[in-house]
Image 1 (cartoon, rainbow, N blue to C red):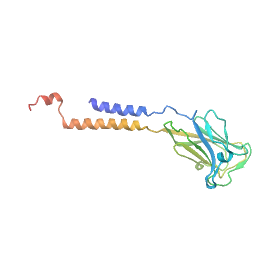
Image 2: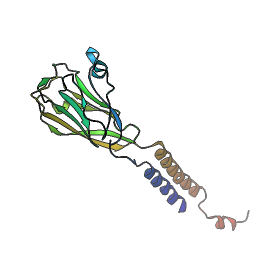
Image 3: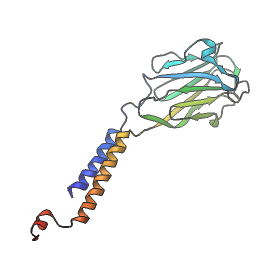
Amino acid sequence: MKTPFRSLLFILLGAGFALPVQCGLIGETINIDRLIPSEGFDYDVFEGQSGAYTVGVSSPLSLSTGNNEYASTTNTDLIVDFGPFGGYGGGIPDHEIVFSGLYAGTGLSINGVTIGTNNVPGLIASDITFTANSVTVAIGNINYTGGQVLDVSLETSAVPEPSTFLSALLGVGSAVFAAIRKSCYPLSRSERRSFPS
């Protein structure tokens, strides 16, 4: 009976070691960029800036030559400010703002987004897509007058570490070994010794 308990202990300990330590973006350096891939346009290259943004430290990053689009982040939200003047996305389908390098190396990945505030005309929920470590906002169809804001909250989940799978495998393997051993030797050692050879 001790061996299955030990196996369960291995599984539980393995799952416990996989819990992430960091839960937000504060202090992370991410990249924010405005792109039009079909035209080879990269705002960072155009303006000679890096697009690097340190969450909780950097000022909002300008994404237009007229300082009319700004992007920033909080611990769990991505924010794009449109204005103070009006503007539009040019009707280009792949005109986009990309937040990348999110939760890189933290053991977390993005598994969903929630739109907190969106008063940007022409921007709909399907314009916001995500991968495990990036969020893309398609802005080609927007037409804003100034003062509009998009706030996107990130939903995350822990990515299991390889050690979790190894611990679980060891635990299951120990339980299987104990079950096989028990079926091969149904008697205890002391009971087996009492039989003459």
